Length: 263
Image (tube, rainbow, N blue to C red; front, side, top):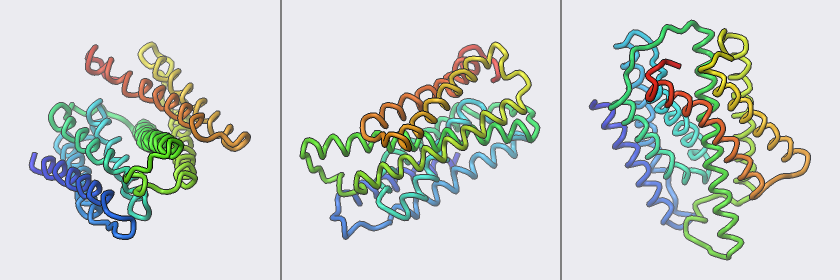
C-alpha cells in the first residue's frame, strides 16, 4: 500500500509541475517534472512485480491490465516529453496512470491464470499496442484542440506548451504506425497461439480488434496516399481507438466483472 500511495502522489506532483511549467514562458520551461515522474514509473512497475511474486504469477485481469496500460502510457509520455515539448501530455496521462494504479490496488490482485510463454507474448503485445494507441488518441485530441484554437485565433497560454501543429501531427502518425505494428503482432500471435480465438466468448473481441486494425491501417494508407490530416485523421483515430477499447476492456469488463468468467 505504501508503494502505491507514494507512486500516486509522485504522479500527481509530476502533473502539478507540468501545469506550472505550462504557465511559464517558453524559454523558462524546465523539466522538474521528470524526476517525480520517473520515480512514479519505477514504483508503479514495482507494485505489479511484488504483487505477482506474492501471487505466484502475472495477473492480467481487468484492473491489472488497465493499470499496465496506464503504466505504458506514462512511460511513453515520459520518453517523448523528456526530449521535447510534448511533456504537456503528462498533465492528462500521469493522473490517469495514478488512477489506474489505485484501481488495481483496491480492486485487482486476482489469482493469476496459468499462461505459457506464447499466450504471455500475445498478452504483452496487446497491452503495448493499447498503451501506444491510447497515447495516439490523446495526441489526436490535442491536435484537434490546437487546430481549432488557431482557426479561431484563440491564442491560449497552453498553446505555447505544445509543438507546432505540423510537428504534432507527425508525432501522431508515428505513434499510430508503431501502435499498428504492435496491434498486427497482437493479432498474429492470437491467430497462431490462441486455440479458441473464435469461441463464443472471444468472437466479439476478435471481430472488434480486426475492425480497429483495419481502421488504423486505412488511416495510415490515407495519410500516405491522400495526405489525410486534421479533422479526418482525428475522426479515424478516435473511431479506431473506440473499437479497440470495446474489443479488449469492454470484453474483459463484461466477462470478468459482470459475468464473473475469466477471459
